[in-house]
Image 1: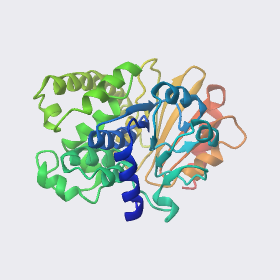
Image 2 (image 1 turned 180 degrees about the horizontal axis):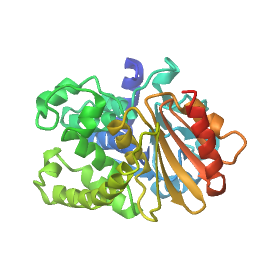
Image 3 (image 1 turned 180 degrees about the vertical axis):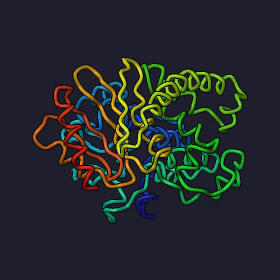
Image 4 (image 1 turned 60 degrees about the vertical axis):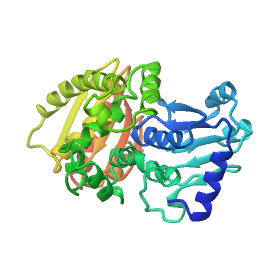
Length: 344
């Protein structure tokens, strides 16, 4: 969380900004963080980063296009010093991934004080915005990043039809109506860039979650229709993944889809449904296997050891990782990983 001094300074800077550029990660935490700040200050432009985890010099094209007076970066794990130097504007970076060291950036990350802290960017953005009307956005963003927010009782009191009681993350996300909103904020960023931008624009104007879930307005109906279309594809894949369940400790599901990627969402839900299993969901794209791994056990170490001696890359959190493996090395990687799981 931001300290009182940091909070005061950041709020003053946002209030004084004339045309801020919000650069945010293309996931639910990044989107909800942007929505909270944009809806509060009602100015500037947003830019989704969907294909990279780094704010690098390629983003300078957007900076030149928007010509902002200030840049706010949300939930992006990495930033290049070259981008900072060439942007030549005040940069404010709120994040919760491993701490980075850059010059010339106002950097807010709870891990600076506590390396083990896990506070989604959404939670800090809600601290800055402090807008009770957007409690639902803050809750959805935190849940989507696998974090039960400290204000969950307030959400339950206000929206008991979405979450009737305090419970654990798995139950809240997968067995309660609020989970549809969590899934939705992931899905609406998928597909063509212009479609995602259109959905985000609508979300900046939605007044309540029921406007979407109960389709109370034309805007809510549009978002719901797009969600239903995407969810149909997702449910088909989930059904096929469930058919792969055996007595084996590892649940492996691979698919090929030229248009939609649901790898992260599938691995999360399968892990919730089968908590005793290690999950690997991979999508074949070109000559690579793009994987999402989940487990209640620590699998980051086994993943890193399984990659030794082969091409490929991977990393992430102790129980939630990602990896990209060349198809030619896939079988060897899989054999390595299965061997490593014997010691978990």
